[in-house]
Every structure is written in structure tokens, then in C-alpha cells.
Length: 113
Image (cartoon, rainbow, N blue to C red):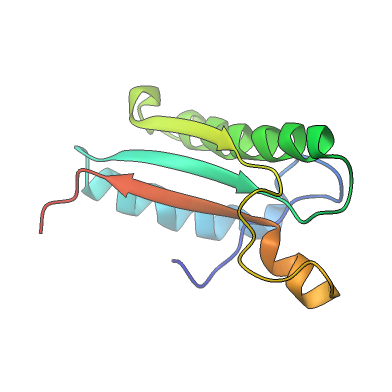
């Protein structure tokens, strides 16, 4: 699942329909691990103001969280956090780097080894 991406409309928290299959797979995995808690972290590139990026990243994380809730994942297991541009994984000097920074990450707690 980690090699796939959730896509959104530009400057929007609307999840693109092309992401539905990935989200369905995520729901299936989450249902197999009912004791886990999942943080949904939204990230942006550095374009736009800090405030705008924080709001957009939070809206996107919340949008994913609401999708999961609407499809049967208990809300008490989920947290949505917008990080804005604060945690880049690539440079923001190129289109490729900025694209990598625009992402949703899932952090799972409670998996037993």
C-alpha cells in the first residue's frame, strides 16, 4: 500500500475517484487489524503561505479520515493531522520534489510484532 498515492483535485480536499481502489485496500487492511490506531497525516509542498498549506493539509487528512469512517472504520481509531509544508521528504526546488511532498501518510500504532 505504501507505494500508492491518494490523489486530490488541485488546491482541494476532494479525493479523486482514482484513489478509491487504494482506499478500499486500506479499509480491508484496517479491518484485519481492529486494535490499531491510525494517524492520517497530510503534507504539502512549499507553494502558498504557511497558513494555507496547514489548512489544505488538514482538510485533505480530514477528507481521508471521513472516507474511512463512511466506509466502516471506527472514528475512535482515527486521527487526522495537517502538517503543511513542515516535513518535506524531497526538495521543493523542482516539480518532482514538490510532487513527492504533497502526500498523505498513515502512521499505525498498536501492531503486534
